[in-house]
Length: 340
Image 1 (cartoon, rainbow, N blue to C red):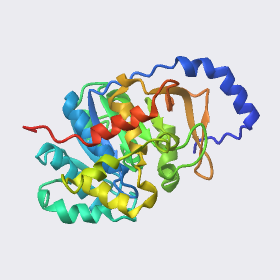
Image 2 (image 1 turned 90 degrees about the horizontal axis):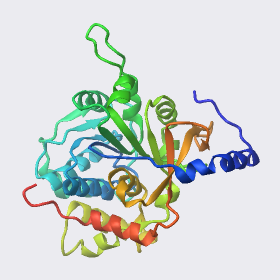
Image 3 (image 1 turned 90 degrees about the vertical axis):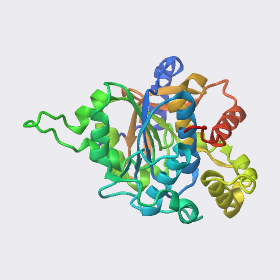
C-alpha cells in the first residue's frame, strides 16, 4: 500500500511555498522517439479524438507507434482502436493488446463504440491479432533501445500493473517487467487525477491498479489532470464537417455531441492534453510541478511536493487556451497521409 499522508491545508501550503522555485524552474524533457498507446476507448469519446491526434502527429513527425493497448475488456473498445489504426495507416500491422483480466467494462452512454463497429468494422474483421497486453508490453519493450519509449496512457493503468508484475526468469536471463520498464521507458504520460488534489474517475474506478502502478513505477511519470481538459473544449469542427466528410473520428463526434447538449460548443479534452504534452513538448504549453502522487483511502489523490520522479502539468503562465484548443482541433482533423 502507498503510505497515506494526512497533511493539513496549512502544512501543504507551507510545503508548496518552499518548493515553489522548483515548480517554476522545472524543465521536463519529453522526447518521443517511439510510443506505445494505452487507451480504454470506453466511457468517454475523448479517446477517439486523442488516438486520432496520436496518429496524425506520429505521421507528421515520423514517430513510430509500436503498439496500441486497450484497458477495457469490451470487444467493442479494442475493435474501435483497430478501426482507427486502420483508418490512419491503411494496414493492420499495429498490434493491439488487451487485458488478461481486471479491465474496465464501461461503455459510453452515447454507444459510439457500437456505431463505429457497425459502420467501419468490415475494414478490420479478422485482420487484427489481439495479444495479452502485459506480455505484449514486455515483448515490444525488449526489442527497443534503452530509454527510447514514451508510453501515453489515456486509459486505466491495469495493463501497466500486470507488466510490472512479470517476474524475472533467472534461468533464461530475462529481466522482470519492472526492470525492463526502468531500462527501456523514458517517460510515462498518464491522463488521470486532479492536481494538486481532488478526484477523477480514471483513478477512482480501478483504484487498486492506480495505487499499485504509481507506487512501483521505476521511472518518470507526467500526470495530465482533469482540471486541464475541463478548460479546453474541442471537436466542434469535427461535428460541423461530419456529414460532408465522414470518417470514424467525425462520425463519433457527430453522434456524441448530438447526444450531449452540454457539448454543443465542444467536448472536454482530457486525453488530448496528455497527447500534446507527450508528443509536442516543443510548444511549451505546460509547466511541470515535481513531487509524487498519493492515492488516498477513498481513491482521491493528493500531491506530495518532496517526492521525486513524478510531475503534474499546469498551463504555462502565458499559455493561450484558445491556441491550445485550436491546436488540438487541427490535429484531430488531419487526414491520413497519402501513401500511408
